[in-house]
Length: 112
Length: 110
Image 1: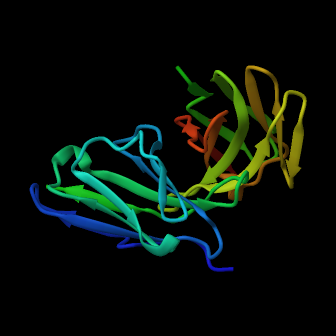
Image 2: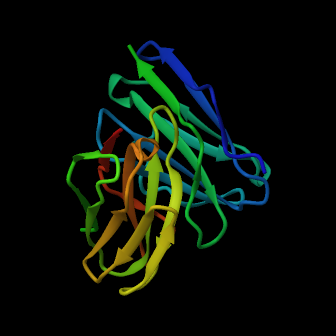
């Protein structure tokens, strides 16, 4: 079974630019999540999709972040415009209903 | 406020020296408590889910236990390949959002 795939693995962008992260979950997993870890802090929840619907987006920091999940398959997370404090590792995960998550390897975003 | 605190922050063991990692949690209602292992440059890898106080789960040299306020991850006769960061996380009732602790970095020396 293929795991959760994220790309790019690394991205370095300038402040004010736009970056789009992509996540391909495990096939058949309706639940898809975005989390991030900034500067040595805990992994923090961003949002949760069930199929193509946003179930909980309470963790999204502000309206510069936009997540979509087209047709209930892959998901994208766009940051526009990026700020320095957006730097960190962005993780995507997917799950069956009550299981633990399967995480991707993450995208390390550096805003300079 | 829902919260997860892990201790110690770092733990250094000799190969074969058993020990335990602690996870204290505060949550209004617990839907599940999770343990993950994370290696450098990778995403967390799921280990266990515990649902109710008194429950125990085992996998190779790892054993997770749960009480109403904390969970322990016991490592028996660890090997160098057990070196990693171990993350505890709780999922409150009413949703799928999971709250992670800061982790315990485990170093096992041969």
